[in-house]
Length: 607
Image 1: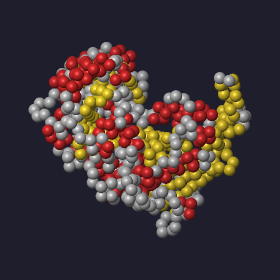
Image 2 (image 1 turned 135 degrees about the horizontal axis):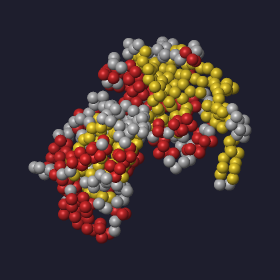
Image 3 (image 1 turned 120 degrees about the vertical axis):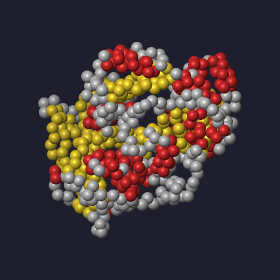
Image 4 (image 1 turned 90 degrees about the vertical axis):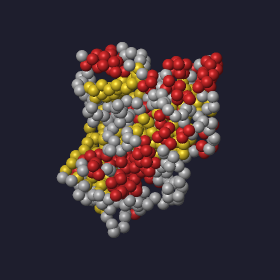
């Protein structure tokens, strides 16, 4: 296998053609999506895993207002070829003109208050997939030929006829939305699916450093759906439309679909590409203009990314501030890499494939990663793959930044240290600063102190908190904010060149630095081998000691087939469906006296 391919899919993964085919679309997206100067040329605007759903990605593509969804359907393996199939859906923006081409029911769904939230986790909602489906993507991995292929299959127009019409109940009374026998939907599925396929195929050409060597197109007469009270739903031939299947192969011939018959078009070099594809973005591995615009390495720009250590006790609002920071940088064409590291003996991340970090989200302004190995190794991979302008190391709320500074000082060949920024919860600060040495250390080590949630306390409380913070840290820059909203230029200056008033990491205090263990905060792991009784579990959670600061894990219940992700903070908890591939169940309890609490909790839930 070629060197470019080995950087796209780890060699160990290539040993299983089926697994390689299943991972190929995701690998193409994350490998090519956010290299500065390349992402726009390839047509990407963002990629995100469905955190709760099974095998899903949401994708934004240049030129389209809405969001694409890619849902894994099935995978097969024959001899040395793996084939994975994915359902493509397109969720139009609520005000997008294209919404008028969908069914009345789809239009109603797009106007619901929770529409965008459901889109982010669309695999949990089969009704959304049915309403907004546009086509099928197939990914092929051929190990003997060392090649891959991608195909798109979609109807030219997806038409639905309402035999009885559609009547809607509105505040003004009943209205006839669709007349009997007319079209409830006439959606240009092929035209809508092509931008996603073009971007994915262009990414394949870029990542594999070669243009496609084969192209096929198959067609067949199109079908349309009709529905009515007496007839139910059935399919029938549709006039003046067809189903299309376009395939591209890189060092491989495109496998045909026998159901669509002999290809009407088959191309391979040195024959000239048909005129209709002469301007296709995937036709060349080169990206004209990209190397001369934003790609810092090809321009010889060697400025190191600037590092922010972002800390703050549990519930202070770090995530809200970070979201605002990323939005601020994205507006300035800045790209942020976020590295998160949680306390606990188990993480909830997927397969890491031997890496030191797991990419959990790539969006228009940032890449989010979970640390799974050494910080230096993870940074090396992230800086090489994504070329960020800023790196934010977001610590757990129970971390003391002093324990990171010596390690960070050894990274000065990779990063320019900018700040230890600590977020303080104005509401809970009095308690946490009194009770927890880790919280006090987070304040002492900061060069920027951000007091958040100031809208929830009165002026007297803020004056008292300011005095407490100044006793712990007399020289750090102190700011007050609500909802994590404060301009980054105010904190760090233009281009991050503001001179900060705290010592650099190399000059941090020596000796023992407090950790969560000094406050008797520990992490305890519970292994779960058998399914649990949901009622007993819920009752036991409600009785957890107030010494528990955080709990999380993967659990199975007798009344559900799929595992569920458990998340707990004092006063509330959630259980959400998890990927079926999570076959190990466990719980992590974080808090004071956690070993004893975990022991009693395990006894309660397992009987």
